[in-house]
Image (cartoon, rainbow, N blue to C red; front, side, top):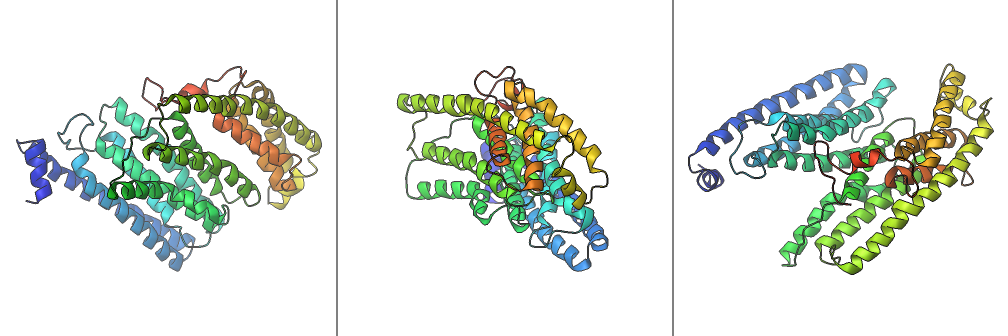
Length: 416
């Protein structure tokens, strides 16, 4: 019996039931490994026929390496498969952790496309599809764990580790495909750099303070993963993606900088001076700035739509060149969505949702006409700001905010 196993048995559970539970968990780990291996084998055979054998081997190598990392994390964390408030191990993973493991498998499949050219045809969409499904599964796994009353420390560990691995893989892949600039890479490693910084402080005997909960952090992280998912779509290329990268990078970098200030003691999140400055900044960023973006963005959107409707002189040739058989019908459908979203965007009615339609309008115009700093570039920036920060001052209806400010399944909001 190893020292770690003995400590697990005697300190946490003298009866020995924890040791028995750990043995059963190791069997479940082996079953999980078999499922991962089966999925990798199926992916290899699919790609060997749909792509080419050499590319399929490379995919299997990188997907297998990512899966091994995830399985190693799972193996080393099995002793944490207990409720947050109890040391007694549970013998099963539960539905929530099972979904987290499914998310990990999907991320491993995405990792297989690293260091290879974008695959041809319908396969070009596969990395984006797999990563998007993984993010959707990640969104509900904690909710499922809470409603089934099967939350475990293991589930939290896996969720955090797989999130870090997933965003790293997706950003590297987007850089590889040319959608994101190389300078975005440090943001892919931001979590690892943050953890390394904490380790460095502890090693030097410096104090490490606890991070305060923040809904803004959660919203920024959620939009970041959504943004990276879209960057994997084969239809988006620079300079559109470069501008979007700048706008999405700023809140993420500022969020990490603020968190580092808290854990290092440079910022006292409870100090009156900090709270005053934070309240003033919050009023600007989440109040006045979105209001200005709603008004200015509506004006730019009307200008763009007036230039294109009803004959689509720029959009139609672009879609025709892209291979769309009947672009006018599609463009009228999109234009109807844009027009319907204009008033809600201006008035702040479901402002974040309406902002996504404005992002779509800006992306379409930039793809067709190029980046225009007199029009579509500012619409893209304004819409992303509203999507991030909300409708701002005098927003008429913001039902999406309570959903974003609390975890699914929780009855209380996360402090801002």
